[in-house]
Length: 228
Image 1 (cartoon, rainbow, N blue to C red):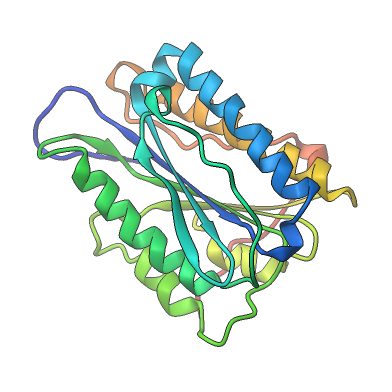
Image 2: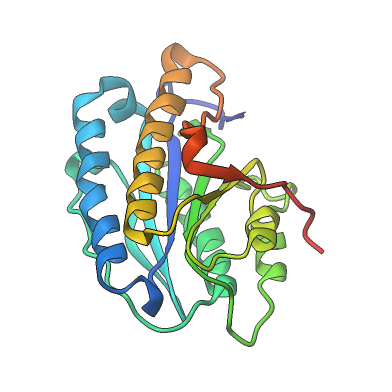
């Protein structure tokens, strides 16, 4: 999983939260996302290993995609307040993710070593914009691009299992149950635990392993599919 530049003794673990904020997320679901962000900040503040390694970027998408927080050390960053808007456009999400991954890692400075970026994708629905989302996804996961990430997808509500499996490069899950707010809370808690455990696997200069810490009873694992 490790991807390093040439110098600097302090490697960085770039994490990108790519979250749906379309109109279907209005109310309790988006509030649950916002309420979970301080938990992630607390873990980074309190866990020296996570604080040393993890750098977090928050991207939202609906009919367009926006940078809510550029790649940053959350110990020193002000958390954004996400708001729902518009329809769902996966193409815009993947295009912005590609731009921000490269911009964020380059902004770390020449010679900074970095682990393979991880994108945690979360959506409650399906792409309903005119443009095809597969081409931007192909560009995002192109292995000839030096910053290509691992993608872990989480779906709930009306999210399409086939799309989630296509988007993910390593792991795809759909949350069980009918309570969308509880599903969002569980997904966000899973993200926090996964960032903490993955950062721990990178301690003392280790190669690191992507650890997705799910509670089996809360999710249905989905097959990983090829982008067609």
